[in-house]
Amino acid sequence: MARAMKVAIVDDEADMRQSISQWLALSGFDTETYASAEEALKGIGPDFAGVVVSDIKMPGMDGMAFLKRLMSMDSGLPVIMITGHGDVPMAVEAMRVGAWDFLEKPFNPDRMTELAKRATQARRLTLDNRALRKELSDGSVLMKKLIGASPALERLREDILDLGQADSHVLIDGETGTGKTLVAHALHAVGPRASKKFLTVSCAAWSEDQLGAKLFGPAPDGGLPLVEEARGGTLCLEDIEALPNALQARLLTFINDQGTPPETRIIAICNEHAPDKTVEDALRADLYYRLGAMKILCPPLRARGEDILTLFTRMSEQFAEEYGCEAPQVTAQEAAQLLQAPWPGNVRQLVNIAERAVLQNRRGSGSIASLLMADNEASAPAAMTTEGKPLKEYVESFEKMLIDNTMRRHKGSIVAVMDELCLPRRTLNEKMAKYGLQRQDYV
Image 1 (cartoon, rainbow, N blue to C red):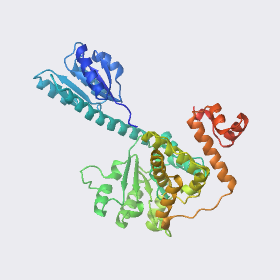
Image 2 (image 1 turned 180 degrees about the vertical axis):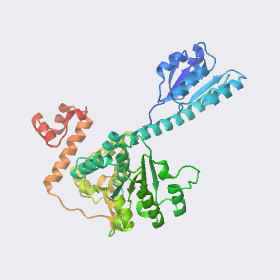
Image 3 (image 1 turned 90 degrees about the vertical axis):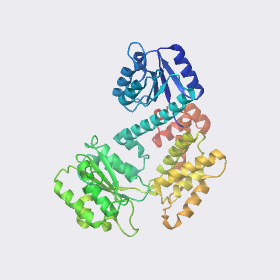
Image 4 (image 1 turned 60 degrees about the vertical axis):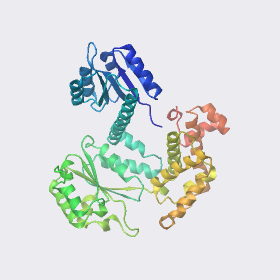
């Protein structure tokens, strides 16, 4: 669900503060009022989750000085200034300093509401972009996005941590939907180049001439070519298998000319190759050996065992929160079907099914089994065969998922979980220890 955005109203006149606050509150805004700029600065900081409406003429710190302080603290904060009648030069100066817009007294309340709505939409977008940039530069956050405890995923985490510390170029391979781009971001974020640039370009999205210009110059916008702009950091080449031969030769020359350690680290991602081919077949041999000296293979979902149930649970809970409804409860039969599904689209396919399962559950119709059946029929030509597993493994996977789900719903209340699952304390403790579940993770 979208988070509430505040409107901070700053005016030394109590009647004006109250009337603006009441009007915006009736329009659905969460308002807070301040009698002075000095008081407002105590409650408004960088990344303030909202916008500011301020009068220009106030005793003490006036609106212009207040605006300058806000802009120096957070230049992306929308500030709507209220000016006196006919005070156009001051309004123009406020806009030059960084005001988002201004209102001239006496103003139409509907105009105030319209400006506040547009300002909060802009603020939400700014904060979302900041959060995304922070997330993509935080190695610990990215590693947590690799959800699961299967041996295949543990090996992937170890590879990321090991290769992230190295300066060598890396080649990432794996089936579609296995999270290769996430792995590339994580490799950069856990290493010594984390504070430097991470630039991405798809080799399949541009013509040969356009891609050559973007990579090696002259750049179309007159800026630096990507191999130079990423100097000191990382350049991620997605769809490396689509890189034309002539550009493969230029890339090889660039890599050879850099020396050791390279100033620009290359992370190449192979997103698709023929079933009977490898990425080695798609690249020049000399380029492959330079890029593939360090290689990461992202495991397919069908090889990750009970991670499938863990991922499905987490994704369905997230979508349920987003759509404001209950997550679907997975039956033992559906858990077995999730574990046995071929998952040709891997994690991306699972996320899509989890979202559709939540939407079905909100309508009170359909089942997870029907979604799996429809998905697998649609992708039958690409579906992979899966090996059977002992019944004991299916039972244990379902049991772990059931305890995990119940602990989450009851926020770690052991008594509530014991009552719902009809388990004595000792048995529940033994099973939690067996599956590596810890109460503190749910509180």
